[in-house]
Image (cartoon, rainbow, N blue to C red):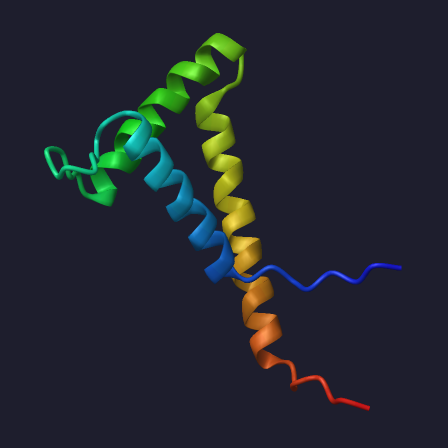
Length: 92
């Protein structure tokens, strides 16, 4: 049976950064020649606006999903705090 390591919030943040970087490159918000070099906040705002457009066409309530994501985020923070409170695993 395959065992899975828990996902850390640092890993989640890295995945999000990869999404931001890909979106920025795909939309020319950041270009290799440095012609455009928008900051993460600007790229995130544009990505969220585009996701809102997508949600509307897909029949997804964007605001409801955003509200729900706050709960998921808080659960992940709580899980991380619980893991931090656990003693390190022992090797046998």
